[in-house]
Image (cartoon, rainbow, N blue to C red; front, top):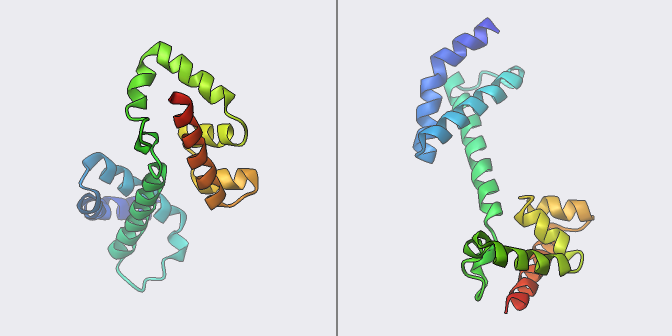
Length: 157
């Protein structure tokens, strides 16, 4: 453990500067750096010494960064406000009366549309996770979510 503390203090700035160059956000860069060192600690036994330790640590950080970017992209694949006629639903939710009407509409939505919509929108699950829960494919989850949004759009009209 003492050796890893030395590695941490010696390479933290290098990994942090590298992650900062990737994400351009200091808080996120620090989070990525911390996670990279955590993963490195867990997997230090797999380091074969074929490259510099700093390169290995930066590679871990880069992989974490790209994984997070992909995860964030999946979360905004089909935002509700991209459907014509549903612009500003977030604003409508601020109005309690409208929010109540929207929740009634969502409550009347039949399964699996209602459940998929709730899991995606409020549970923030990925399409792969939703598909897995239903024993279906990721594509099935995407199509079901899209159809749920279309049904909501019709209900809003």
